[in-house]
Amino acid sequence: MARRPRRSRKMTEVSLQTLHTLKGNNKHQTDVEKGLELIYGEENLDQRGTFERRSSHRWLWAVCTVVFVGLFLGVIGWTGFVLFKPFRALTEPGLTLRIHGPTTLKFGALQTYQIQWMNQGKRSLAHARIRLVVPMDFQLQKQVPTVKDAKKMEWDLGALDPGAQGSIEVQGIFTGSLGTQSAFQAIGSYRPVSFDQDFEHVAVHAVVCADSILAGQISAPTKILSGDPVTLHYTIVNRSSEVQAGLIARFTIPSGFVVTVPATTSSRQGVSIALPPLLPNVSSSVQLVGSF
Image (tube, rainbow, N blue to C red):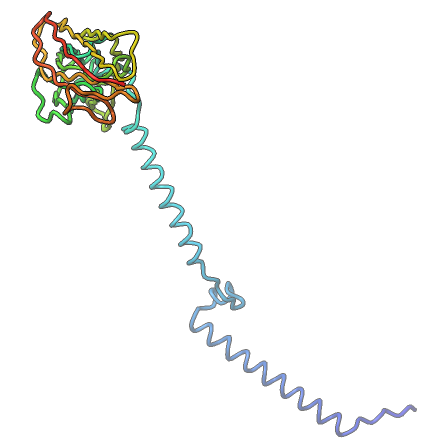
């Protein structure tokens, strides 16, 4: 008969201690489950099973909110842009300008220019204005209607109904040199009804100074001896229909020529002689005396 192996006392103590620990843990687990049943109820406890840590989604909600607000504002902005079209183009004519007057000028003659304007569109126009830019050598004498600021040269037309029209007239004298080319420029600005921006129309009228109301002639000896006195004759004719006053004859003197008459008006650049007023179709002459 085989003998049973003996268990050592030490092993027996360990087993008893382990069994006691397991019973203690089971008892603790039972107490915890009873406490949870009192708090959550039996059904909720079965559904929960285990405890898990919930993750926070606040940052996700914040990002979604910002994106939604941005899209909403963008839709509103584009909707207003499409409906109201603040920068849409004007497809019909508005304020149109035309400049009438001579293109070939006479130096010193009184010239008249007319700026005709008209609202050719089907819309009423607001804040209609016309600004005129004249050549630098054009001396303004008269304007109709009278402009408030002669330097600014701007007329305020105000509101214009469809088909409204009118004209502006200016008169002046060109004082530039022969062959001078320049231009008049009329700029019309206006704002059509239901638009929130201004539009412009520009008219240009080119001119050239090709003639003069004065005709002059100079005569002098063809052969001159050194030291002998020389007399130069200058004759000028007023070919206009008006009196010409304030005229000055300027002579360019050759190098080495000494002017004796008139003695008080000579300079390094030449000689200047004031002329008396010239009646229409009347001539005047001056003499210049000197020697080499």
